[in-house]
Length: 245
Length: 251
Image (cartoon, rainbow over all chains, first blue to last red; front, side, top):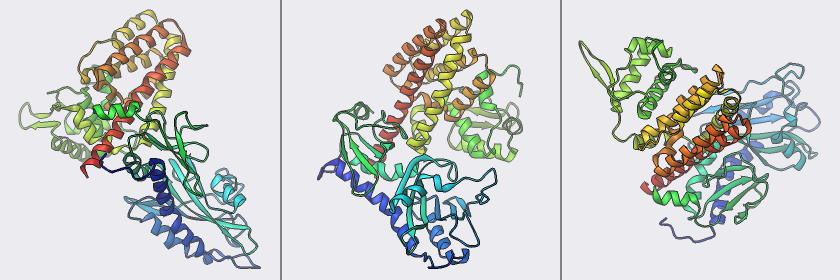
């Protein structure tokens, strides 16, 4: 390592997590601001036309971080389109297309998204949320992080969420260089539940659940984000390997 | 291609591709087989037409893939009588593997594969404990404890040991899945064989697995196999992380 250690490695990694989440959340805030929920009447689908170009811009990002993006409305919100998902998928090397979902609650393929974490948590808390790592069987079919931001009616109730899907593999690519550069100690990034997002310690498998912070490890949480950077004890087996290799 | 005399390891190489056959997938499969040593130095590959038919792809796809293998220096083609495409074993298979294949994978890919492979290999161990006869045990022991000293030979021995365990389950599906997973992940799975220490530990673990199978102890056979495969996957993860450092240093 050639970089001098200016701060605690946990703080450096926490700052990188913050940078990663901001990269996904900032455009979502703009997307949420592009939606106006009328007072006293149900909006029509056409009133959400501003979402499509913003969602597609996310899929065309130069950093290729986002693989799905759009708006999911409260089931009863849109007068002419109940259970509506204005959601697009695709990206570099893949065509951009609207996600097809079953909007008839009586059909076999119907899934009630109001039960899912990326909807239920912003609805309960009124705040933005990151779901995952989880296997997203509705959309990406892969280990995914879903970022959602609530859109509220004038009375404060949640009318919709705007959101973006990020493959955990992409999050990994974003975070790993800083995790390696932060120093000699192994680093593990977990979500609020303790599920491993990415680790430089081979014993912490992606997706594994660390119910408590392992003995000898220190945690550091970035402000207001549901992730934690865990820094392991000094010389690990991994590092011994690294020196040999 | 003559099917009856093709050994099991070769059948996996020439099994039809499950996804839409593409040149890239064909190249990857043949490349892994050559680097792993399943296809030996100087061995003749099937003709373009036969290769295309065996893999269920268009002849043009097979041609494209052979061209890629020539570009990689893994195949050489002779024209005329007695001509055809012949395997050129790489001088340093480990370096080639690390360069071309491991760098493409995320930790998510490695873990996802590893968990699934561990589930299959562990289940195969459990069923083998129920079903292996004494002659199967002898073969398993011979396959598992080879005292191979070079990484390539040890990787082949490792792959064959797990195939033998799968075959001892008497389940064709379980054996096919074992073959399919080994073909998909290729030689990366047994990169831990690169060190003498890894090879010795692996042989000791095989011996313990065979003992559990011989004793008919399905729980022990399963857990020992899961631990054995888990350690191999951890080694792949560590090598992937080390590669990241090399890339960062080179920037």
